Image (spheres, rainbow over the protein chains, first blue to last red):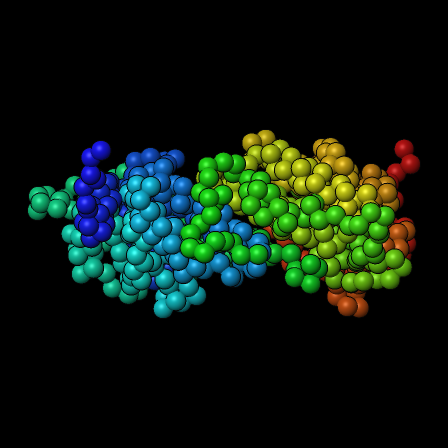
Length: 262
Length: 280
């Protein structure tokens, strides 16, 4: 019978963190930053169907990098958590902080349990508030740490260099087109100092949590022609034409059945 | 009910298990006690609870209108004068409820969530048929309570984006679903509302005419059914009228419905039985 090698806990954890970090570094980055009317999510993603950015609940969205099956699993778990909580209590009781905590516990338990391999994912959970001061962005790492981020955050491969670039250029109160330009310029940079790439709308997945939306669900994908117009700096594209017409119409969609009838 | 269980605060296995896109299926596996239909009454028990009454709906050129009166009754008592019985189910559909108000409202909440949950998980919306079928399943789940007098009989109306027209579905207590042509009514005043609409309905109505039609029908239902409330001019409580078109769900504002209701009541002062259809 051979004697098992002794591996110190420090070494075991460092190995796991290294394993997860390598998995994440292979993927393209996701940028999340605040703008005047909310929070914008920009990812490099050529797929129209497999999303890196998704809606979780009324004011909460999710962005992820890493292994698709792992973060998709967490996304669905988050939607179930949010819907169950909103159904049991009230829609207002579903918060990004609560969701980030649950994700942190889940990732942390997986990370430190010997039988499971750590998840190779990095997540962002963001919630748009009534005002810019109330916006919340949380970044979650594979070991279950939660970081409360301000203004902008980048996850994925090259996140440090892109994060530095964006951090220097981001300021409060950017318009959507300006924020989008900062994010796309950051993503297009070559980490080795070469010429930046050109990213076309087809290569980008963009979504916003827009506090100005009349609907109670603030998440909205920015697609096709609207994205092209925004990327070319057209400020008027920030509110699309159907949105305003739909706004008056939809004011009542927000209504839940009245509490008195329950 | 806590969404996360267990000491670690980690998402329970059920949350991370790949499976159905249905919230109700998930609820059934993880928290069955929260499913409305699973709560039975003791054998032989009946309880009295507020009931909602008449819902009417009509298809017009480019969409569908669905409307409900505002009265909830408990026996011979008016339990509530301003109850809402027509709710958006999602962007392109609405549900109107007749029957036991408490259960019906809970069913609507769960139904709204079911559609939203599917949309978030799948990244696409259900077909109108698919939505109508989900409602069938929910009504079927309530059959036990319906047998004890707590029935919920909804009506489902929506704009079918694939076919480009409005459609109406009605249900019976067993979940039996039928698609209606042109117009439909459900609830205690439905007999009178249907008779009214039968004489007034035409294929080529505009949205405005269809809205007037459904308020006429509700007036006639209230005229002959004590459980249905007419427009309450004194308290300014008017029927809830909602339109669904390719632009989505829109509830008529109070001034809009008030105007329709006032013109109808004014006309009824002259002709109490309302507009007359030709004999031949």
